[in-house]
Image 1 (cartoon, rainbow, N blue to C red):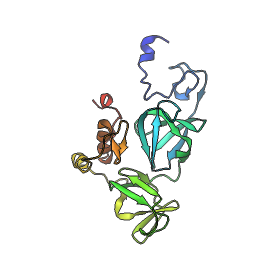
Image 2 (image 1 turned 30 degrees about the horizontal axis):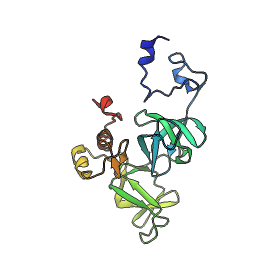
Image 3 (image 1 turned 180 degrees about the horizontal axis):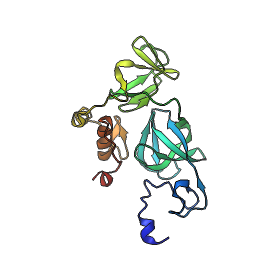
Image 4 (image 1 turned 90 degrees about the vertical axis):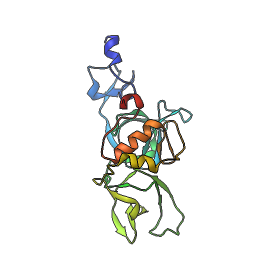
Length: 214
């Protein structure tokens, strides 16, 4: 393979390492082994995606609940994956992933919403979901929807096909959010993460990084 051919593959979005690569890249990249990826989804509120499988490695981007990923390898507590949303490749904590089913049916439309162990806001919250997180609604109980073994306030969710076309308005809702390199939630965002999140909520696919967006 020539140097020019190698440079055509952006390492941020190419699931290939010297020892392992996506089987769909056979013949276009060099790797000791090729595998077919397996579908998974993120099952925790937010998960850090890192360039290397180390907890102290820098944050490249974040995956949120309901994000679909393609899984290539699990080792030493990390899963080497590619995010379906934007093709980003990196390492997520293995514990952040679960089966691809049930597929998400709704998304969180509030800046943040709590997960409760019962349909009762007086119960201690289990955690929170950020704007744009995707959930599989299994039923309704009072003012809550059931998501697995937890409950979310139904007014904070909407079906996936209900978009928010005013992406500038979404950005205005996020004014004051702290800057976080690699951040993609309402707790912390970087500049390109803000753009991607707002466009995603508008139903417009968008790459992750500023140079890709340009």
